[in-house]
Image 1 (cartoon, helix red, strand yellow):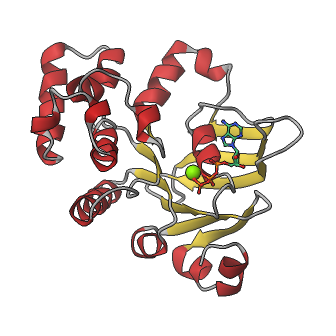
Image 2 (cartoon, rainbow, N blue to C red):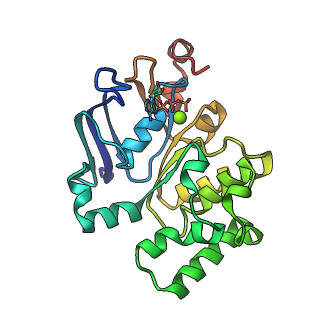
Length: 247
Ligand SMILES: Nc1ncnc2c1ncn2[C@@H]1O[C@H](COP(=O)(O)OP(=O)(O)OP(=O)(O)O)[C@@H](O)[C@H]1O
Ligand SMILES: [Mg+2]
């Protein structure tokens, strides 16, 4: 039985500046339930690729689809598709300051549910539920901008949960987290993976990739995918990992 395809990238190239691509002809499929670690040296384009998958920026060349439907500026102007996509796909920015913009943590956790038009009692119920699991009840009335970097990362992660997305695009989730919060975040990812959520995580943490991901995509210094496959198989290629500054 073939698994449902969530994303298809077909020769995707992108440049912030038209004459310099930071992603070159990227092609791969993401299937439902995949846990993919996205590896690559600094500046190879991991965050850029996650932003493309989240429909925040669009390829200059090539195509990307989500559940068989083109993902582009035009399709995201369709209100029904946009709501569906924004509900299903959650994105954690590498820099939490870009993500957190509300005046309190509680508003941060409620924001997407308000956008989706859920009734207030349901919003409060879901927010409290997640805040309990993340042990952040005391943070709810606080301003996110007065928190430490690690606390912000935890709040940013928690704020993805109330909408119950099926796809998580996570950019360096565990950076800035202390050992206890890192363990919590990793355990939580396991729970998400066990419930068939699709996870794509950009990371420099090779041990994390090895123990958690079932597939690895490596973006090389030429900004293309230089390896994609089962975790064990990709990590066995030490020569490539050395060449691409992964180890
Ligand atoms: N907003 C931007 N405008 C112009 N160039 C950018 C922008 N964001 C990133 N870049 C450039 O695009 C390239 C890829 O950046 P990106 O942030 O995707 O890399 P990364 O693989 O996530 O790196 P890191 O491991 O440091 O997080 C870099 O050369 C970077 O300087
Ligand atoms: Mg990055």
